[in-house]
Image 1 (cartoon, helix red, strand yellow):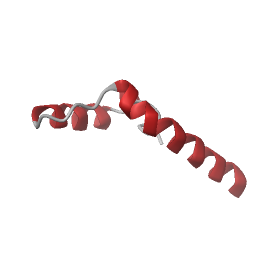
Image 2 (tube, rainbow, N blue to C red):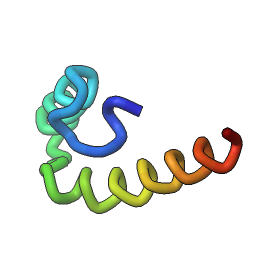
Image 3 (cartoon, rainbow, N blue to C red):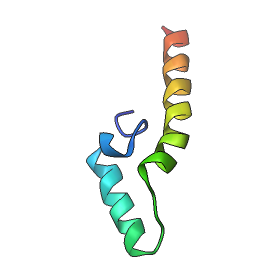
Image 4 (cartoon, rainbow, N blue to C red):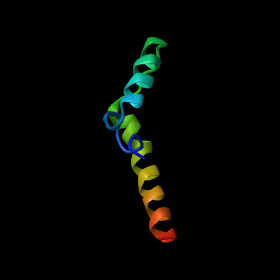
Length: 51
């Protein structure tokens, strides 16, 4: 879950974003957050329900 919320939360995210940039695909902070925030909240909700 470390890299799900923000682009800067995981070194792996930065490596993938840099590689995508070399291929012409721009992955910005807000683009990542737009998908990462709901995914993180959903995951936390599911984990909370299981506990």
